[in-house]
Length: 189
Image 1: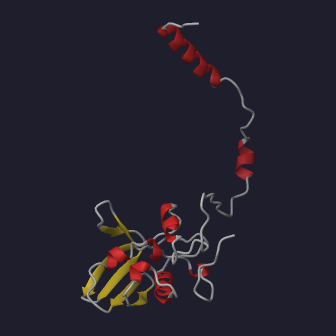
Image 2: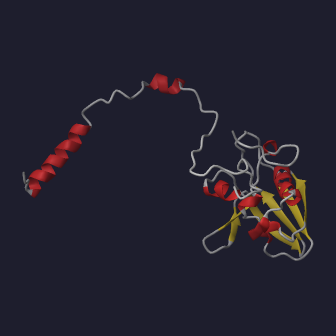
């Protein structure tokens, strides 16, 4: 059977109109939607499972970055220029001292607040890791919180690349509760 173009167009238009005329029976009344329980966990399906519980201190850091499940203080744009992420601004106060202002109003997945102490904790865990993240090879920093939302990083040499280093997924900032006593990130189940 061969339909002319006008008949084919009319058939497609009628099909589209009729599609909306039937009830699939899947819609819920508004009262049931409002009473639905809130989800309390996030499930992620992946082709290759993480090696180390999605620790940013491992090669799993790339997965955290790609899935947007962890963030860093700084992001690199398409031209590789450092831009604010969890830090709203930063300045090099002298050749070996940087100060970063931490974004206010950010919550971790566990409900705790992002603050300077969480940033210091995450960076210190990376600095102290038995297998240091590659971005920190040959790097020694002293990291401390100056107040609730200001982090100071002191370097052992003038490091103009420090903001770019902080964009590495291996330096993702996690809630303090994400770390075990031995400094490892708690594995996911």
